[in-house]
Image (cartoon, rainbow, N blue to C red; front, top):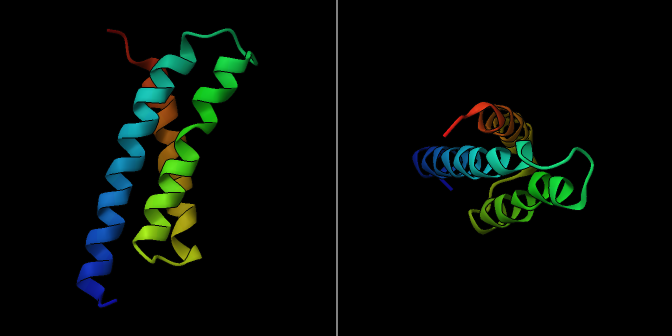
Length: 82
C-alpha cells in the first residue's frame, strides 16, 4: 500500500470512528451508568472500526490513533444536547 492510499484509508477510518462514537456517545450518556445498554454503547463501535481497519489492510500501528478518536467521540457525543 502506497503512502497516499494509506493516508486516505487512515483519514476515512478516522472520520468513521469519530462519527460512530459521537452517535454512540450521545446514547451512552442517556443511559444509567454501568447498565447493559451503557456498556453496549461503549463497545459496539469497536468491531465496526476493527473490521474497517482489517479490510483496509492497516497494521497495528494505527490502533492508538483510532482509540484516541473513539474516546474523544464518546466524550463529545455525551455532551451534545439535541
